[in-house]
Image 1 (cartoon, rainbow, N blue to C red):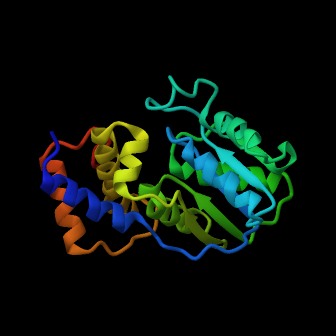
Image 2 (cartoon, rainbow, N blue to C red):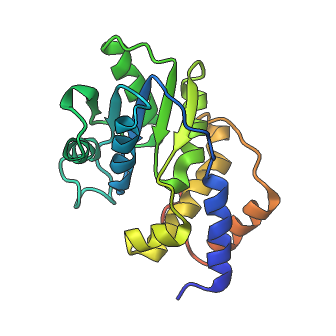
Length: 217
C-alpha cells in the first residue's frame, strides 16, 4: 500500500521532471529506449506532425526490457513506428546503448556516420525522464539545441498505463537520484533542485522506493 504522502512526493518529482519545452521543428527526433513503448508512439506522432524529418531509435535491452523487448528496445520502437505510418527510410536504429549517456553518444555518432548535420534534436523520453535526457544531452552534445518531449500524461494516467505503481515510483526516485549525483561524475550538467523536491526524494528513499537507484561513488 502506497501512502498519501508518498503519492504527494511522487507528484513533486513527476512535476519537476517535466521540462515544458515548446515543441518546434528540429533536425532529428531521438526516441530514447526504455520499457515504455509509449515513447515510440510519441516519436511517431511528432514525426507525422512534421516536427522532424528523421528519427533515431536508440537502445539495447535492460533488466526491465529483456523479457518484453527481446530484440532490443530500438528494434521494437522501430516496429511500432512502422505500424504507425512512419516510413522505414525515415528511421535509423542504434541498437547498442544501455544508458542515457550511450543513447546520446551513440546516436550522435550514428548521425555523423550517415552525414546528417543535426543542429537541433527533439528528445522523446518517458515523462519522468525529460530532465535527465535534457541534462545528459547538454553535457555530451553541447553545441546542439535540445528540446525535451514525452507523452502528455498525468502521473495517475501513467501509472494506469504501466499497471505497476511501485515500479513507477521506484523509477521516479532513480531518475531524481541521477540528477543529483551524475553532474559530479561528469555525466550531465548540473541543475538546481528545489528544496521541496529534494525533501520529497529523501522521503521516498526512506519509504523504500529504491530499487532503481545506483550506488553512490
